[in-house]
Length: 333
Image (cartoon, rainbow, N blue to C red; front, top):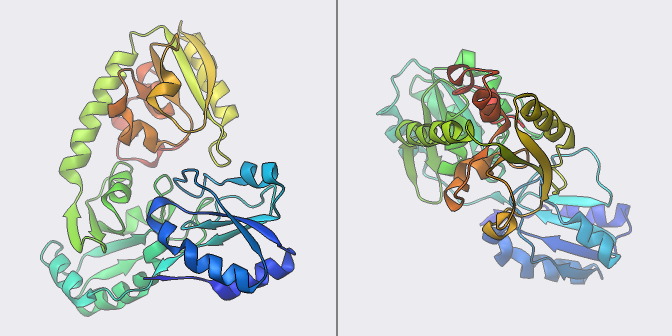
């Protein structure tokens, strides 16, 4: 079950005089739309449902609101990543409210982590409410739990997203291990950017896993793609068009660096990255300045390198591989 911040939603509707609104939800939360619809009907607000994909707080259907002449957007499942938007936006965070057997979790973790150790805690937005409970339970068994403040893309203490682990990076020198409450996807992202052991507790699967083996395999594959990239001449530098992925300045900088190293490089725009997007394009490889996780999870779908900016700098010899891996610089775009 998920908590819906309906009273806050009511105040937002009244403040912004919302009469027609677009509702956008990721796949896992679309079953909640009928409940939202009922509430909006009671407030005499007309609802339109977006079927477009949304992969994070960077991926809001603002253009759909503008094209349809609606008054605002209700975006479900993520917190705000930007300070302002072109239209009124309400982030319905949908935090997980079912009970989690904390004592069992702590007992299992205690077998993996030595007592007396300092453990950094972080969670995705759905599970943030459980951090305070975990903190108290860890203290009972002799662990020292620590959380870090959020960053530019995260509003809350201890919060992480698939591309922003600031709350972990800020405490990494103060802890011995990290526990991520969320999916393995989020744990892998954290583990690629820190030099401490990272464990993942997935409440939906009721499973605890260590990320080390999987991350090492991913990094081996990334290194291999960097080696391929070194010999390529015609390259595309991807500029994301999603509202939170528009890094045109970074893309231009990468393009110039590639040209300085004898490469032919062009800027190319992409909204949702698919095989069709890149088919029949005249490029041997790409640099991705949109969502960094596309290069990690989606590379398998493509026959050409899809490098991160940090990996590109390695490929042209500006930085060393060992200085980038297991550091925040790896995923930064």
